[in-house]
Length: 269
Ligand SMILES: [Zn+2]
Image (cartoon, rainbow, N blue to C red):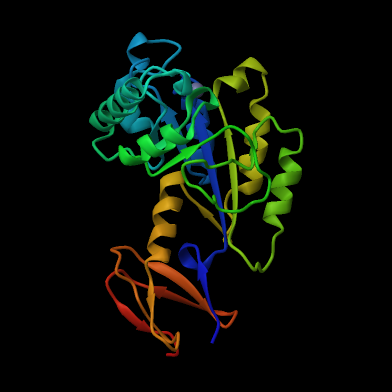
């Protein structure tokens, strides 16, 4: 019997977005995401947000990013690889604490400001409760990250081949592996280049598809962890899901089975 892991509801493709710096233009971007059912992660600098425009007001965070993910981008946007480990620890923890006070939830994601990081910083941030961290250099393989503390996006939204890349992703049929498309940028770039049409077109094209899971970055990380925790019987016919959330499996190339949290399921039935 062949048992393949799936994304929620038996899908095999996930789309996620990641936008940095928490400027006022996030209002317009979130509206575009919401109209198309697309989910994003927003990486914010708590220490900069008290300055007012062009940063979003802290009071807007909870309501604006509802249904999306708020993640860290360090307290004051330093080039972190040039900082001492003490300062790096302060920058990440104070940002976490500040953003958690605004959202009322846990903040566990990160994007490295100025794309700057090192092996020591990856280790430090992970030990300080960061589950994943995004870098700037794209990797167009549509694969899940090998190293979650060095998560390469598929492309920036200004990639001249954005729509070709979107079409390639949308047209993946039955896959051997789970596929991910991950787009990043800054919402103020749409004003700078006067090209809001780029993201409008992308979201219209990608949204509303039955075979795509629209997820935030942390939802993907947490879901993959739940999949990896599954315990299979020796004959592969039974599975125990020790997590609190459901995971989905595909049996012999067709049947989709939901394995609810805390349950053991006979996959042959
Ligand atoms: Zn930034």
